Length: 360
Image 1: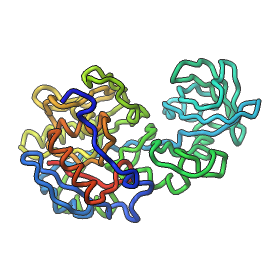
Image 2: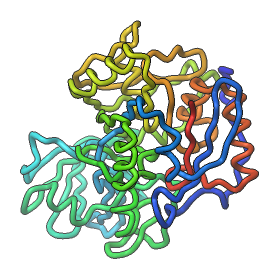
Image 3: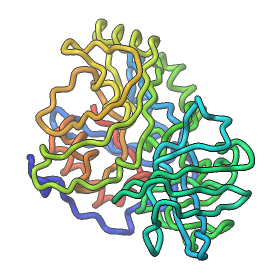
């Protein structure tokens, strides 16, 4: 269970969802009993009936920043940039900021290279390393104001859009105006992510209201999802993989709600692998959660003992990804792979804009 190839499965390309369901909660929901591997098929709108009134539902309220930019060098060469740390509350109104970026260009830019964007935004390459580049941005008004106007949503690479990345077109990986809404949860509240916590994309305000009316308590954590979510595991023995770290915050009220639920024997239901990782990272040996902020680099794979989470709502994940390893740790690798095979056979839609699972 520690070999990378143990997490492969066959997925037809046409099952990779390129757009969301017409209505968020109309997506399908595969229910997996992790105890005996039983599977049931529902729709996401059924979720309130599948939760116990005593449950605590924990969501991730991070907000995705439109952190992908398209510009040109002075020579005219095109440059595509993904800002890895797009938001800094202390510098929200700054006109000059320094950010770490991933950069794509026909020729690797050297330090000192200037890049030009729309609306007077420019950048200078300060440092150029193998994968991450440091850029100093300058703008005629607050940087974040321009970023939110001209930036595009940083869709994962398996969601494809037509176009070449020029302003006003839909670039591959850069999203369309609709993606500004679709690739964002309805409860997003704290800027900082460069990828969506996709299990949360299925919720609507109406569905959340029905969940609360049932008696379920809803609490939030924040984990700013980084691009490392999509970085492939490159080692044959997964135990040698080093996880990226992401900024998180657990409010005191959320920690109290989790600790109370656990002390009363009520379920803690985590929405998404990001919520799982945040809660488990902050959990002590007895499962009690400590409030606070920090950086989470917890890698969960089979053999991990869960201390805080009792059920998980999640999407279907890429083969050989850290995310499929996490759900395999929670539900058992054979149970998960069997559920994935059935989902493929039944034509479920996969990945960020795809269907969901409830594992309990």
